[in-house]
Image (cartoon, rainbow, N blue to C red; front, side, top):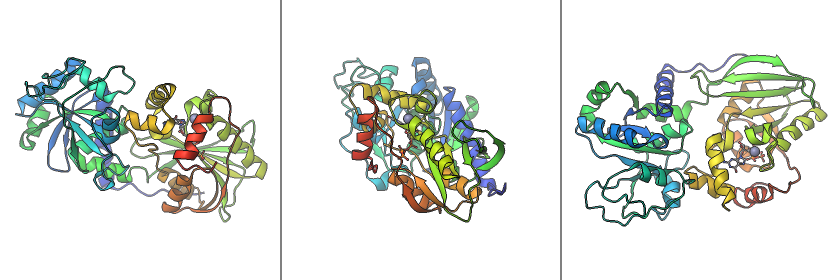
Length: 403
Ligand SMILES: Nc1nc2c(ncn2[C@@H]2O[C@H](COP(=O)(O)OP(=O)(O)OP(=O)(O)O)[C@@H](O)[C@H]2O)c(=O)[nH]1
Ligand SMILES: [Zn+2]
C-alpha cells in the first residue's frame, strides 16, 4: 500500500485557498466579492443569512461602487418549485452537476406592480421575499409579477451558486452587480474577500482528485475484528473520507467493495427513514464472512447536500413529497454525488478492479468513468421496515435502482 498521492498543482492550491476562504466567509454571513469568469463583478451574501441589516449592507456596498439593486440567484429546480419558471434549463446551459442558474430581480420602484400576499411589491428584494423564494420549508406563498432571467453557465451568478453549495447552505444567494472596474475599490473599502469565478470552476472540476492518506489504525469491529481504518484528507483542507479495510484483500484480484455515503441519521442513530444503517452493517458483515474487502465511508451526507439540507428535504417528505422531488424543491439535483473521491481512494489503496456491492447504477458507471474496473455487481438489498418503503420504491422507480 503506497502513501504516495498525486501532487496538488500550484494553480489548484491557490484556487482552493481562495474558494475555501470564500466558503467560510459565506457561512459566517459575510459579504464576498466575486470576480466572475464572465468578466462581471458581484457582491454575494448567502440567502440563508440575508436578514434586513444584511440586505442593507449589500445595498450600501453596491451603491458605493455605482452598482445595482440586489437580486436573488436560485437554481432552476428551486425556481420551478417556487412557481417562477416553467421548465428546467437545457443541459448545455447548466452547471457541471446539471443545475441551471436563475436570477430573480424584483424592481424597487412602482414598476413591480404584481400583487403579493407578503406585501413585497415595489420594495425590491426584502428579507421576507428572500426567505419565501429560497427556503421551501417556510410557510407562505409569493405571487410575483417577475420574469426570472436564466443565465447560461458559466456566469458569475452560476459561480456564486456553486460557492453556496460548497458551503452546504441553502442553494440560493443574494447578489448585487458592481461595475468590474470598481470591484477592487468596493472590496477594499468594505474589507471583503475577493474570489475569482475561474478558481471556483477549477476547484469544482479538480478538487476531489487529490486525496491523501493521513493515518491508518486498527479498529476491531463487532462484526469484523480484523479491520483497519485508513483516513484520507484533501490537501485543500476539505472534507475527510475513510476506508474501512477488512482482512487483507489481494490488490491483484478484484476486491469486494462497498461505497457508502455518510448518513448520520441512519448510520449512527438507526433511523428507519432509510436503509443506510442496515446497508452499512450488512456490508461489514458480508465482507467479513467472505474474508476480505473494503467499505469506503464517503463524507457525502444526504446524497451530498449536507445534513441541514437533508433535514429540510425530510420536512418536505413529511408533507407528501418523495425523496427525489424533495431534493429538487430545496434547489438541488436529485443526487449531487460524484464518486471521484471513491475512485481516488481505491486506486491509492492499490485496487483497480472491484466487485461492487450496490443497487445504484450510477455508482457502477461513475467508477468505470474514473478508471476503476467493475467486474461484478453484488446486489445489496435489505428488508424494508414500516417507514422506508416509499423511499425504497422511489429509488427504484425514479432513480433507476436495481431493487
Ligand atoms: N437528500 C436525501 N438524502 C438521503 C435521503 N435518505 C437517505 N439519504 C442519503 O442517501 C445516501 C445513501 O447512500 P447509499 O446507500 O450509499 O447509496 P444509494 O444511492 O442508496 O445506493 P446503494 O449503493 O444501492 O445503497 C446517504 O448519504 C443518505 O444520507 C433523503 O431522503 N434525502
Ligand atoms: Zn440514510
